[in-house]
Image (tube, rainbow, N blue to C red):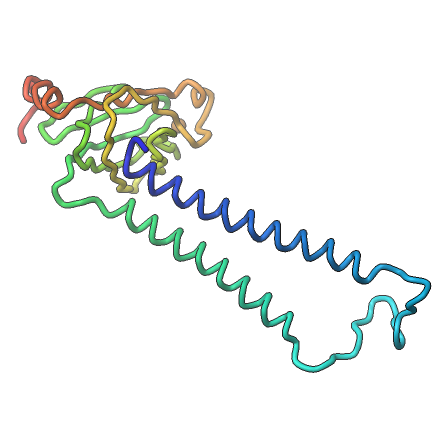
Length: 212
Ligand SMILES: [Cu+2]
């Protein structure tokens, strides 16, 4: 995977996919088994009184119910724990992370650096270093999204959201808005340029920003 955030996000996706597939197979198989087992048979009439819309009288300990309740709880709890631990991880940047402020607006992206440099449309970050995104919006709801890196951060006016990642592969990644935000939504594109650390330092050092 090209980034730590992509690993976390797609790992969670795979957990949902795997458990969902297993549940689907188990439920489907059990349904077919019951359809076959309890089919109408001339030679074996149904025992006792059975009337439509009424449960048969209870017989003993409801073992099947308890097993299905237990298995469902295991599945649901795994998804809840997986989801919240992934969110907690993605929203807790390491202390030494490089900080970049992202402000969304109708319709574009603004990047502000610790040295005061402000750039429109194209953000640059170093590879192989943790980077903390500090995201907000100037007008309406947007979402800072980069599919390949597993990044999707709500950009909400009056609120700041944090997220972090470490990108392993230097490249130019496409930024899209993931929240319908007006007529320019479809063309609200940007670039995130992930550079070799030494190259980034040279570039960053050469940019005359304001005060630190
Ligand atoms: Cu938008």
